[in-house]
Length: 203
Image (cartoon, rainbow, N blue to C red):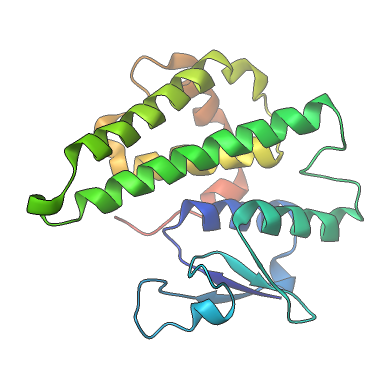
């Protein structure tokens, strides 16, 4: 398999954490990809022009991190769901946390991209909308931090990747302020080998 990746993408980090947790590193070839380069051939594997994209053995390209992660989980677990729990309450909890974490990444990235535009065409209202979306999501995670626990599933790994991205791109804002339960959970969970092994380069 071949993974098209960028080391600074939180969605890629989530996929890389899954690969690490499942012991699949020796089965995945990594291809560093600049999705923003006008010369990139990434659309050949993902017409959306985004990373991650995973090209599997038969040449099929899978894209969007939830799909890639579930596919990888099926390879490692024989379909029994090591990181994606079987149908039931635990599965919906894990998928819900993944959706919330991915949404945090979506909003943070949109805010950052808008902030990189020339000042005369930048929308501060749009940036504030994304900031508030992240703040509300973090407040929900603070309330539900006790449900994250010490387990590794797709929900907890996604939350780790999202909080790591906030540290990476918005570290000056300190998301931990006023969120002691979430901060304590993150401090413990970030000791996982998969999190340490996928640290992005310095900003």
